[in-house]
Amino acid sequence: MNPLYLIAEIHPHPEKLVEAKQAFDELMVATLQEPGCLLYDLVVEENSDTWIMLEKWASVEAWDLHMETAHVKSMNDLAPSISRTATILRFFSPVGA
Image (cartoon, rainbow, N blue to C red; front, side, top):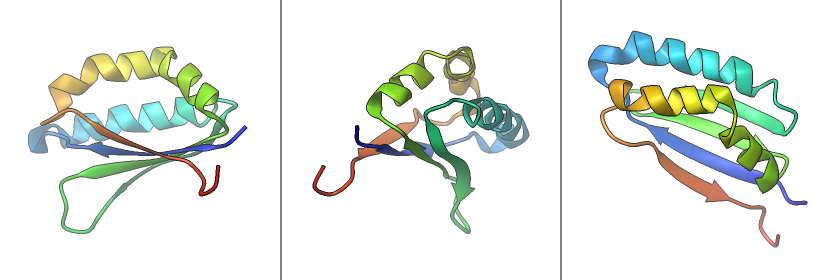
């Protein structure tokens, strides 16, 4: 099985940064405990208001299971109230896979 790489572009509301950060901290703690999660890290470029979640999963199937967890479903329910726009997902696979 090939690993799955994912970049999630997150656009938090400026007035909801504290709430958004807390929600993503909780999401990261839970996600990093999942067996197929190899990397899950929230970063931001200097002078940017866009957050980037860097993810690496053991397989597409591991990511599919992640998307069905209670913590992801909870975040998906909360996201419209803490985000300016929908999260943009970009998927990658190893070269030659």
